[in-house]
Length: 224
Image (tube, rainbow, N blue to C red):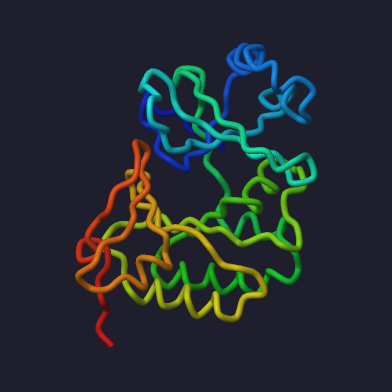
């Protein structure tokens, strides 16, 4: 599914597709990428890019984007920026939709995470290797891969959700990683948010940089 928005409204962790002209024009500026697998036909194949955090010195005239290559092709992470008018936002798959691309050993963990999301009316989304394998058809997952999840939700975040994630992680055959994703694209590492002291702070990752945010505004303790 494709969804268009006015220019400039994308947030961190959004998926976008670049038009073929903009992609080819950018690729011609990168002699260092000549011959790198998959790149020449990336846009024509409808494969996405992901909105990343801006690095110091990057202006706002273009959207900061990232593209990781499969581990078998060097696991290189490529950064770029393209004007918003050449991008179309793409609705990424939910965890349930991406499950068929995951190893058999992951299925019980995925089912538990989907059920936890349903308990809180949330739909977790994959990122990392599972996401890229699902949206590109290329091989990103290896035996050492983590299961990386985004949990889009409002703040404050219920401690039951965080404790439920910790319980699933304890039984998982892989490392269960990921972020609580706030509506503005701010990401909070779920383990850090869960384990931070009541009066403490937690690192928040946004489109324009990093900031420490008070835990009291981001987490609430549910009644027993």
